[in-house]
Amino acid sequence: DLRMSRGLGDVYKRQVVIRRYGAGIIGGRTLDVSGYPYDVIKAGHVIIASDDDETLFKPMPLKESDYDKYDTLPGSHHYVGVLVRSVTKDAPLAAIMYDGEVNDKASPYSVDSIKAEMKTVLPGLVFMHD
Image (cartoon, rainbow, N blue to C red):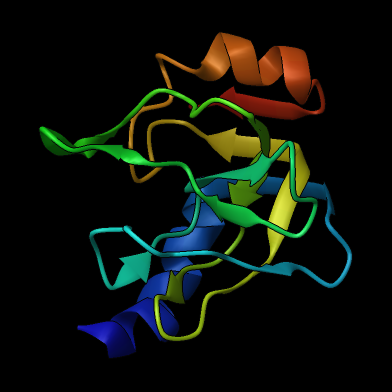
């Protein structure tokens, strides 16, 4: 239900996923959601950007064989942070946090396979849980 993704359900989820907001990209960014399989990109989703086009930001792709797991980082892309609040594909206006604490157990997809690489690129973004 999209109303829950924009309503109280998302406020609760955001408070659980984003444990501490340190800093983010001022003004946010519009995400390129072409090829993303779901109608809602959830709070805590990893966001990447193109190395070749400084205006191209998108959700980290999911494995085609298992849409419940992150795929590998595409070539010519880098990690920029995590989505602060859920957005829909028809309005992908993203607040992106690059410094702060993320509850990795409440993230929409496991970051275990990419956590070490993200820490190298974004040292201020910490994944932890209770």
